[in-house]
Length: 309
Image 1 (tube, helix red, strand yellow):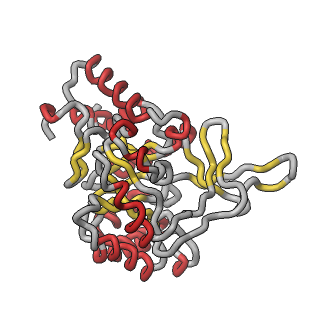
Image 2 (cartoon, helix red, strand yellow):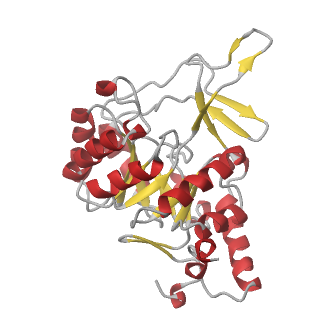
Image 3 (cartoon, one colour):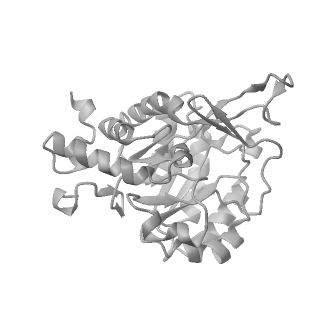
C-alpha cells in the first residue's frame, strides 16, 4: 500500500484497514452503539467474541482476576452459538464502518466444519474469519489443536475446505515450536497468522488456600506477556511468508511500533481495552507522532525495520 493512501493504512491480504489496530476477540460487546463510528475511532478492525456451533454457558466460578500487570481469565468461550450469531449479531456488526472478523473456536472436526459452512453462506457479508486453534482438541486427548504442526495442519485444512473467504489462524503461544506450527498453518491455506493468545497461568486465594479458578489454570494477558508475545512474532516472521498480526500485551503505541518493527503487519489489543476504550485512538495518535518525529510518511516504512538493523 502506498503512503499516499494514509499514514496508518494497513493491508492484511485482501483486507484494507484504516489503521493497524485491531480489537481482539472477547472484548467488544454486541451493543449496537458500540459499533457506531464514534465508538471505533482509531480502530482498523474488530474481532467478534468466540463463536461455536452450539451455545456454550462458559465456565462457572470466578472468570476474571486482576494481576499486578495484567489479567487472568477463564471465560470458557461463552456464546449463544453460530445460528444466534448469524440471526442476532451479524446484522449489528455488519453495520460498522470498519471490517469485522468472526472469531471461530476450533472444536471437533465435524463441529468446526459445520460452523464454518454456516458462516460461508454469508461470505458476501463477512469479511474474514479468525480460527482460534488454542482450543482443546477433544479427539486429540484435550491438547490444543495448535500445539503441534500435525494438529494445526489438520484443523486449518478443515477450515479451508469449509470457509472460502480470508482466513486468519490464531496460534497458541504454548506450542513448543511456534515456527513449525506457523508454517503448517500457512501450508494448509491460512491467509494470516495471529500470534498469539493468552499464556497459561494461575493464582491462589491465600485466604481460602485454594486456586482462584475452578479449572485451576487460566489465560494470562496484559502488559506482563508483551515481551513473550514479541518474541513469538519475531520467530514467526522469520519463517512464514503470510502476514503476522501481533497479539499479547499490546497496551500503547510503543508496543504497536515494536511489533511492526519485528515484522508484524498489524496488532490486536484486548486487555488494554478494559482500562480505556479510547486505547485505539490513543495508539494511532502516538504512532502518527512517532512517524512525524522521525520524518516518516507511513507505517509501512517501519515494517520489519528491526530485522534490517
